[in-house]
Length: 121
Image (cartoon, rainbow, N blue to C red):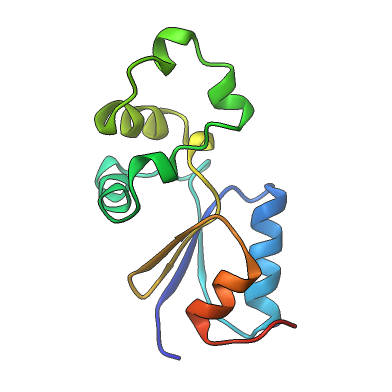
C-alpha cells in the first residue's frame, strides 16, 4: 500500500501508544506529529472538521475540556471548537490518522485493519 500515513497526537497518550504499536506490528510506515509540542494549525483542524465534523474532533471527555470554565463550554460551534483545539491541543481526539486522505479519529484496531486491508495480529 502506497498511502502516505501520518498519525497525530500526544506522545505520552496510552491510546497513541496502542495505535503506533498496531501500525508497527503491521509494518506500516508513518510520520508522527505531536501536536502538543508542535501545535496544529487552524487550517488543518478546519479541514478535519469539514470531513469528520467538529463534534468528532473535540475530546469532551478529557480533563482539559472538563476543566474549562462553563463560559468556554457554552454555545460551542465550529469556530469556537477550532479555537479551543488550537489553543489547547489536548482537546483534540487522538490519535488522528491521515492515511492518504482517509481520516480516522481515535483508535480501534478493526477500523485501522479496514483502512489498511490488514487483519488483526
